[in-house]
Image (cartoon, rainbow, N blue to C red; front, side, top):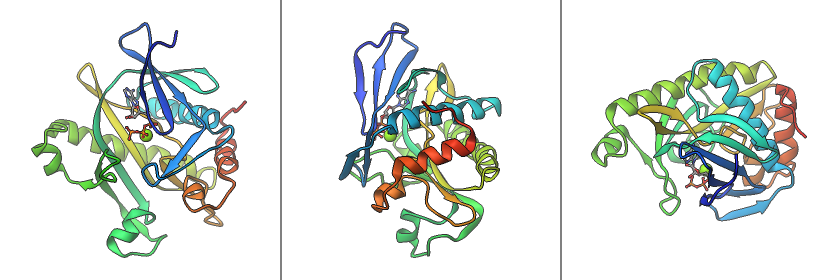
Length: 237
Ligand SMILES: Nc1ncnc2c1ncn2[C@@H]1O[C@H](COP(=O)(O)OP(=O)(O)OP(=O)(O)O)[C@@H](O)[C@H]1O
Ligand SMILES: [Mg+2]
């Protein structure tokens, strides 16, 4: 599959057209960013690790019956995906409190949430991805009620699959963000699932193994991502 024109360059990935109007190439760059692009850096190996990690997770989700855009890995930093009409909404599940919910609700980090909680955010960096609800999604026409229902259902299904997958290798899935899009009338999981968009803590020590290492200047960012990949059995270069 040949890389065509660049369709979009995000903060961590670049998206290219292909010969097939229904397929895109995602190029996972070494760029990393936090706080809506305010803090950025280049991290050696990050693009490769995230590409391989994402492919592994997307394949597990497909096996569990969750429709994803992932087709196949093309190279160390590239994957072929279905071209989706992206819905500009992020779906977040939190199993344990961390990050923005602690500031917003004045709660301590590390509280178990039973049942897990679910939140929507608008994808808009300038507005710092504000939290929204399904009434906003309906009133502004970002997605239909049926699409909202399906995104919610799939996000919870992902939790059932991945919470256990990570727990089996001694990791707590604290929270994660998913993006969905439309593909020939169907809601399909798009974008990525990597330690850039979720929180993972060691189950014993609660050591942070995700992008909070970058946000909080803890160091060892890619080393932590590689350890998570290694524990899952993801083959890296
Ligand atoms: N299958 C897909 N089809 C179309 N667009 C996709 C697909 N998967 C992901 N995207 C979009 O490609 C971009 C990926 O780039 P990246 O994640 O680096 O962007 P970003 O900096 O997070 O910017 P944005 O805030 O626009 O997501 C995102 O806008 C994402 O929504
Ligand atoms: Mg993104």
